[in-house]
Length: 199
Image 1 (cartoon, rainbow, N blue to C red):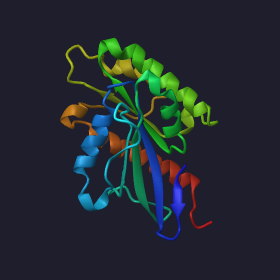
Image 2 (cartoon, rainbow, N blue to C red):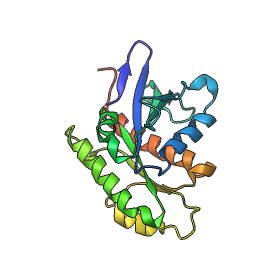
Image 3 (cartoon, one colour):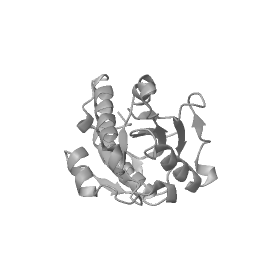
Image 4 (tube, rainbow, N blue to C red):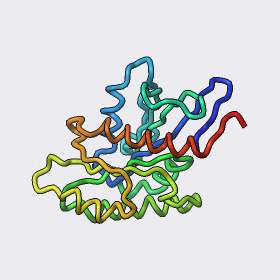
């Protein structure tokens, strides 16, 4: 849930990058962090031990506008995709305003994609949240892999509600910023409907 600070005239918005292990969530955040001007961002922080790939940072984007006149700060998180970190994934989803689901385009990762999407759905449900009540973007990563699964098949399998989606090669920085812009736009539209900081 967005956090409103009336004193600083800021609203903090939480976007979580979710997906199976090694699908490219951390790479997405590292690319974004490297491209945000230093004066607009915090340091990237690891929330857990060196074996857990959960990262966080926040920043003021230059071009997404305001929510009800308040300056918007985006907080980006990743979750660890490995099975052992289920409790951490659930905790990171607490208070989420939007999700980027990073799917792995490799053919042998399709079961993991489905399992991760189901895990995310169940974790949100534990907070009383229906997945499709939130802004949700699908990123189909690793499009450079030979014999990658066609986007149409990935979309038919994972994106049942026809939410916005993008192809990406996060390791090369391709599609990363485009995905973030899609997510930010969806979240901003959603929050502008829901919140009025002046009340």
